[in-house]
Length: 65
Image 1 (cartoon, rainbow, N blue to C red):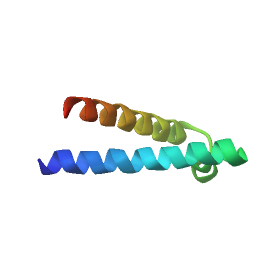
Image 2: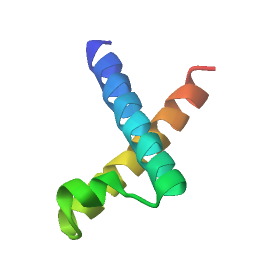
Image 3: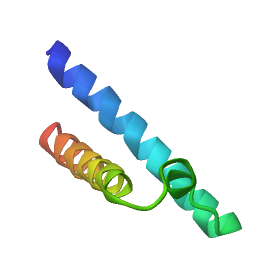
Image 4: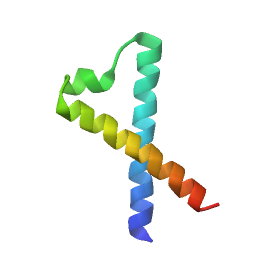
């Protein structure tokens, strides 16, 4: 149960960070992830992990209904 709660909290945090980044891109055409990490594999990994967090949260919410 604790592992599931921790996974949920990590995924939720990553999704919030991703949402804030998209807000910055939309409002100011400024990408925080790229500004912090540059372009490259690490930035790609961050985007993939945030996307996987969104999928996991969607699955978790659907499963818990």
